[in-house]
Length: 188
Image (cartoon, rainbow, N blue to C red; front, side, top):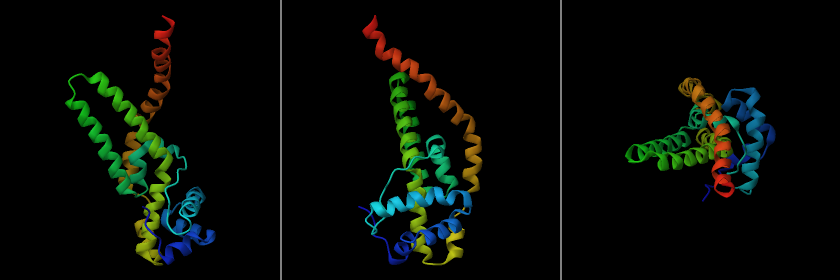
């Protein structure tokens, strides 16, 4: 169940100009404001202007950088859940005696996590923004201090880049294998 918004949150989300001004203070990156404002408006409308509903809006940053992107944008709770899922999967691989079936399952889970974060990372970041609006209650200095970027997330994102490239290559290279696995028993 979605948490009801207070009057201040509603006043910010219901006025496009105010929303963009507060997002600028929070994000501290002018080029990102419109990108997030459109999603925020969708979430507010989906919640019947009374709550902030979960709405998917694709983000390639979320898809490829997953938890590091959430951490970079100071959405630590969502990043923590992604890390827990990843660690649980790695733990399952370590427990398995035969790795191949478990690795296949983990690959599917990893693709699902990447897809989910690609679809919902903007929502998770905006949910943190909306919660910060409630906490700040008009205090722009507090909004700015809770926003911006997390430099640790930035460094981890940079360090993760080689793995992101490997992930992209892996996604592209596995497609012929899947096609072969599906078609080979029917052909031969």
